[in-house]
Length: 168
Image 1 (spheres, one colour):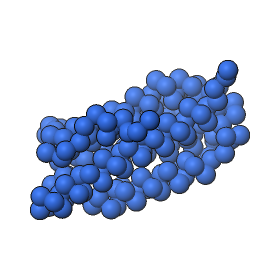
Image 2 (cartoon, rainbow, N blue to C red; image 1 turned 135 degrees about the vertical axis):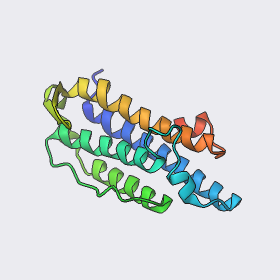
Image 3 (tube, helix red, strand yellow; image 1 turned 90 degrees about the vertical axis):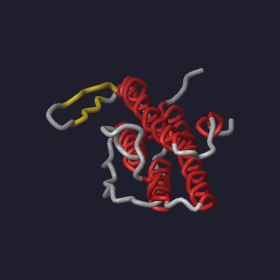
Image 4 (cartoon, rainbow, N blue to C red; image 1 turned 45 degrees about the vertical axis):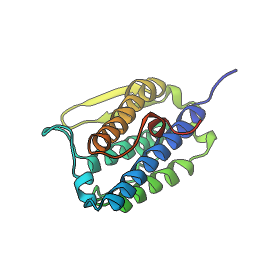
């Protein structure tokens, strides 16, 4: 049985962002229950030279929307990266989910062999679609989700592995 790129991309991204949203929901509830200013979590980081939680979520959603758009050859939506609250981060996740769900399975046909060019600060990287997804996008997505999870867990939010993985 063959698996399509759509089946690899959309359900995996949907689940990951859904789990990220649920983790942020627990963090928001924890802040309310413990009378903690939510900005403490939003601006928290594990090390001085790492991005804070808000940026981790922004990068995760940027990776998802960018990957889906590049694979199907459409324009990548631009977000301002101005989120400073849990509701704003939740809205960003919802907006990203709506975007990726608007792409049809047929648009992904042949994307495993499509050339994807990433323009970085001072260079470019080129991939074929499937290695781009498997070797670059998914590891980056999980890295930034893990960083978000670790920041919250380190700051006392009661989340565990099942929150990260989500329900089957």
